[in-house]
Length: 187
Image 1 (cartoon, helix red, strand yellow):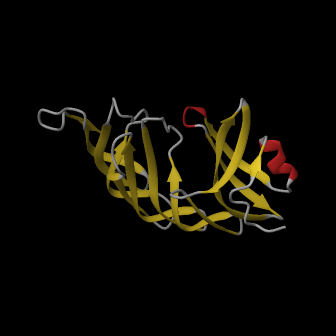
Image 2: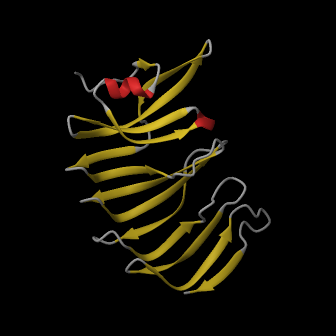
């Protein structure tokens, strides 16, 4: 069977499995009417796909569409090379992705955090460096766990061996008067 399934229509995700494709990871984003999957065939992890959910005359149709901005390659069942990871808290109004490199399943080097609101393109709003062991080191800009278009809170500070150290500042990017409100926490 050809690995290129782009554009094929299915009436259910079960049909995709019946085509001898195993869904490894599936995250349904009902407000965006898509289902994200990582497909595995013959024990080869191939790539990320997006499945569009279309309603045609009250019949739900799923269509496989190759991921355009997210995903990467696997090497021996581990993420390897350049990747774009999707944040799990995607809403209709915003999207957050993490862009960087994996080596033997560990994040390494510079990783950027990119944000796209409903009315804008992706922009870098955070990130920092990972060491060879996949631990955060040096200066980082992290996002609040509930970052979205009504609460754009970020944290600036230092990591050492994966642990926060020293003074961390909290900024709210939504404040339009001076573009930030700062708070500090000492670790």
